[in-house]
Image 1: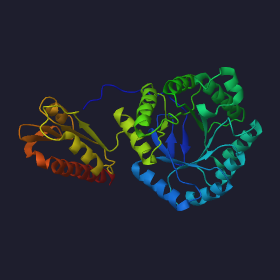
Image 2 (image 1 turned 135 degrees about the vertical axis):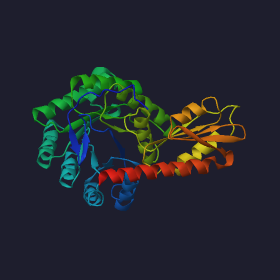
Image 3 (image 1 turned 30 degrees about the vertical axis):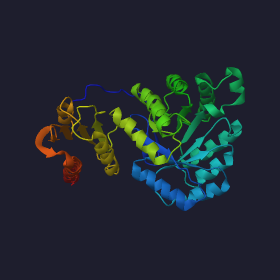
Length: 368
């Protein structure tokens, strides 16, 4: 299908977190964060691998103290996925994490301490060639800035970010990215837009403290999606009060919906009405669960009747459209046969696997 609409991304500088490029039109990466105690090394490594298998490109780990920094070093040696050390309050922990193999450091300017302490971090980051994320959060802006604006709004976050950028640039440190996150979607969007006008450093997008799975998905989709549509954003993290694997899934689905980055099975299914000829909801949910481990991009239409069913099935790689008593199966836009409604799930799975196998064979052939 010919793509008519295209999102034109703002050109930003390029940095690398391990081997993952960020900025300057690099593929938009998806990040998440561990929820385990960092000192519980086995549990943390297990969660990191689960996030990687779910499609995460980068994983952030909280490093609140020296013991966690020591654990970080061991964790770093047990996985090859890029790891970001999340630092608050103690600049010495940031330096220790750099020494211990962090691929990136996240600092919060409001609580990391004096300019001298930030400069000390930058000196080590330069020596070890480690990028830094300046991570501004509306919940922890400097007191003097809050006093000025009365409220942690977009302008307050912008001032906090610009102050830190000035420190970095005076030190001639360019290896950094930025985030300005609020739990308020509109403030977040406004601040990223303002910040994008002031700098060409790469942007890490997210809505902070967005809530549970449903609320957080809605807020993040609107906030992150709105900015991406305007060409702003180089890497994303969806923040949810949920298993972090769900963060990765939602992040990938946001990119998929905007056709920025195709990943996994994209199910197109109708909301159902009295015209439906089979249980669309049951089949759609079942198929999504059974194919959740597939990373190969593939569109699947599950349509309950012949109103929009044939049309959606024709523009999908695999599709089924409800008819009287039976349903029509479509493969790559072509109607192949009628199938019993009791066999819909089985036929969809079988043909999806066939298409993936053909794609893999074709890919391997081209790699030779």
